[in-house]
Image (cartoon, rainbow, N blue to C red):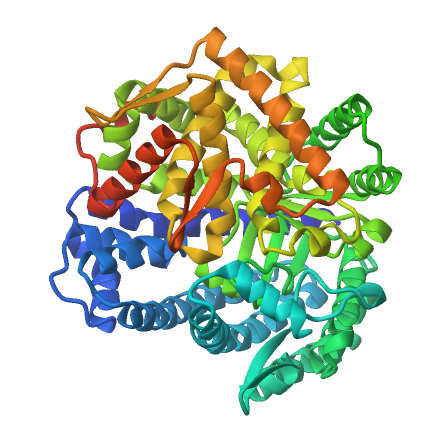
Length: 621
């Protein structure tokens, strides 16, 4: 076991150094060291882009290293390219990113083998996950084109861009998958197929037969390999094998009404794996707004062998009990499921080792899964937190003109001191805001909450706010952490404002909506104010405004908890904060709307421009 722990250290450090090395591309751009940016020149040539300035280069580095395409899409829009052309370039960009990261992940597998890390059993898992991942990555663009660019685009056109009409059509025509007990599921493992003027639902195995069959073949190859090996360290051999077998059975299922139950069995098998080496399967469903078709996630994650005991679960539980007892309305099922899920939840603090498929379109800073509340009632959840990875990324990214213009020097300097010189404070704030966010997802939910509350398609658009605010309120009710208040409020301000940049990025709409709700509290408490005559934002973070914000969060969160306890449609809460304006959502208050419009306009104009008036060396001790 000691060798295994040492090997974990070795691989963790290898991944840490690899991350630093790749992130140097940002440094080279900041310092005009363009001779070190050959890979970005290759990327630009591959996409057939001309007039390659620093804005384009920053967007391409962000796409390649940070795996986010929104910056690239924004600079393409700035060049007034049409939507179809942007989609084509985006898909082409995925191919370049895929090839780059497959080579990098191959290096990781080879490093494990050449250094004889772990045991033959776990080396086989890394090799197998890599091979399967390559197949998932090849399937991903087909999935995107079919579901997002074709089917969903057709539905939007059919109903003139009205999401609620799309949801009504899908429900009335029985086009959602059925979940537990024959009820409408909160996610799908199928796609819509349009033929003879009608839509029908078909399983992935029918829609993507070639791609799915190949993944199944590779999965069975890995199972055959593992059967011949032993896990003498954790005795999880059959847990891993049964997990892979469950995935094979789920991928092979062609009856749409049994897909959710088959994938619930995958989640059950997965929850039994408790080793530091965790494999992520298709779990999330943000990209598809309408039927929540589960994205093609596939990755392998490591726990940090140096991670310390974390108390966030108990802090969250204490706050939940306190708040529940303060409400007039009661729901024993929700109370019991919440407490049970928190008690059973496993926390893994670490970093991704290899990611494929949808993971090449952006990795999360943390994750709480599975989303199946029936499974969670039985087994709890797993929370993954990638704080080391996020800190490295934040330190690597260049300072931006947009942030200087909006936030001002005083605010940014305070943030940068923490980022570069106070890692202990940074990690504590991450624990509250990000790990707290993941625990916040667990609260106030019953097994059928999402399916009932999502009638108008807005559940996710309030769920992210519920999650973040669950972490915030748990913090506010914990006096032992009060010394971190200024840092946490600072983080809320930065998050709420920067999320405006995702106004037109469909797959992260829930986070954009979350930001709009936070802005309501920040403006109402007078922490933020915006002068429309000068377009100047003023930040007033003092004891009086902070106290007002605390009261706003506590009151708003109680209202949201009641919404969840009643299983009201999510729009009943959301409509108090946002309105629909053609294709986008905006705040209902005129002054906040003016700020959001201004910020987004400036983001479009200068969002990728680097600020050279301050340097990272001013903060590094």
